[in-house]
Amino acid sequence: MTQPVTLGGRPMMPPPGAPAEERLIARFRGHARRLLWSALLLIAVCGATGYFYDNLPDGFQNWMLLTAAGALIILGVIIPYFIWFSRTYTVTTRRVIVRQGVGARQRSEISHVRGYSIGVRRGLLQRMGGAGTITLSNGMDVPVRLVNIPNVTLVHEALADQIEVNQILAHRDAQALPEGDAPR
Image 1 (cartoon, rainbow, N blue to C red):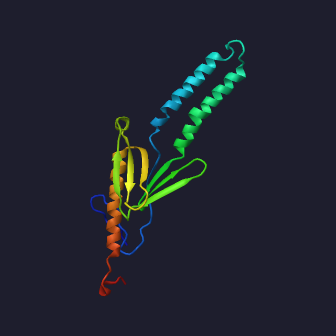
Image 2 (image 1 turned 90 degrees about the horizontal axis):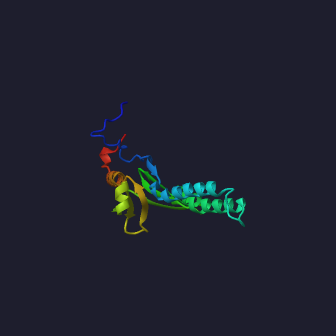
Image 3 (image 1 turned 60 degrees about the vertical axis):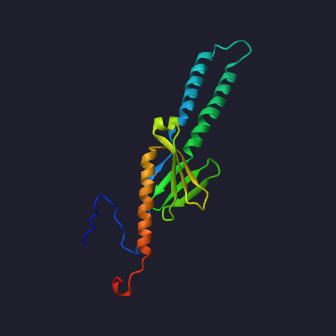
C-alpha cells in the first residue's frame, strides 16, 4: 500500500473518522533580550569585585564585598534568568500550551478546533528585534498571552494555519457518511 501524495506541501490528512495524532510544531521561550540588563549587571559586578578585592577602604573587609556581589548576582542575574527560563510556549497540531512558574506551575491551553482570534501587539523595541506579544482569545475563556515571542510573524502564520486545518478536519469528521458509502 502506498502513502497518499500531498499537493502543494500540505500536511498529510488522516482518513475521515480516524483520530489525528497530536504532533509538536514548535516549542519556544520568550525573547532573551530581556536578559540584557542581567548580563550587563553580571559583567559590572564581576569587574567591580575584581577591582575592589584587597583594595577596600578602612573598615571594610573582603567577605563583605563578596557577600554584596553574591547578593547582587542572585537578585539581578539568577532570579531573572530562572523566571525567563520557566516560561515555555508549545504549539502542537491540536492546541497551544503555555507553562509558567518557578515553584508552583501554571498551565493554560487553547484548542485549535474551537477557533480563536489572534491579536499581535508589537512595541518599538519588539519590532526592532522581530518579537511581539500574541493574544489568543476564543471569546469564552480567559485570553492566552504569548509574551515577547521571537519571530512573531512566523508564529502568527503557523497558528492561523493550524486553526484552518483543524477546523477543516472537524467539519469533515462531523459530516455523516451515507449508509451506502460506509467503509468496509
